[in-house]
Image 1 (spheres, rainbow, N blue to C red):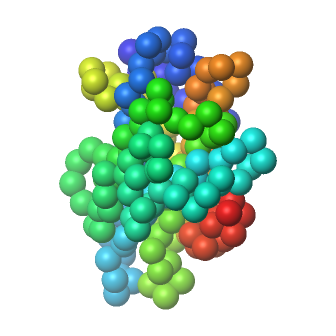
Image 2 (cartoon, rainbow, N blue to C red; image 1 turned 120 degrees about the horizontal axis):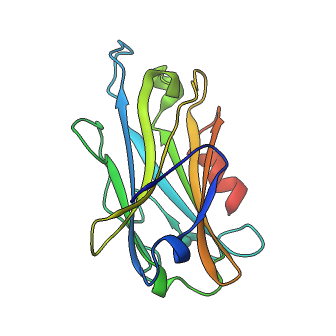
Image 3 (spheres, rainbow, N blue to C red; image 1 turned 90 degrees about the vertical axis):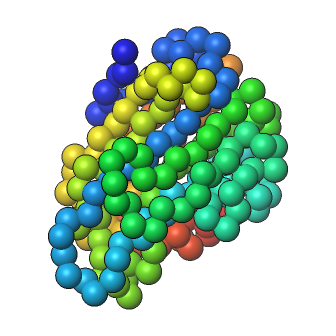
Length: 189
C-alpha cells in the first residue's frame, strides 16, 4: 500500500520496503493549455551529494547529458521533451546496494528548459508528483503530489533521499525556485 506524503513529510524506505534494492523514482506532470509560443520541456536532474552537501565529482550529477552515475547506482531513463501521455513523464532507476558509501543525500530537481526565453513557469504546470516504487515488483511505496501554485517558479526540488542511521529515507520537499539548472549546479558542485 502506497503512502501519500505531504510537503516536508518523510518515510524510511527500509521500513516501508524491507530488502528493496532496486527502486524507481517516477516524476510526472501535465501542462496547462497556454500559448507561450513553445512546447514545455521539463527536465529531471539528480544531485548525489556527500556529507559536505556537494557532489564528489561532476559525474554524480545525473541529467539529460549524463544519464548514469559512475557507481552505476543512479540512471536516468531519458528526457521526455513534451510530458504528454499518462503516467510518469521521466523516471530514474536506483540501485540502493550500489550507491557509493561517500553519498549521503540524493536530490531530485525539475527545471523548465529555457523557461525565461519561453515565458514559462510552474504555474502553467499541474498534476505534478514524485513517486518511488519497487523496480522489481512495481509496487508503489510512496507518492508526493505537489499542490502548491508555483506561479513564478521555474525550478522545483521535488524530493530527496538521504541516509540516516544506516537507512535510506525519503522526504517530500516541494520547494520552488525562480532560477534555472545552472544555479543548482553552482550550489552543489
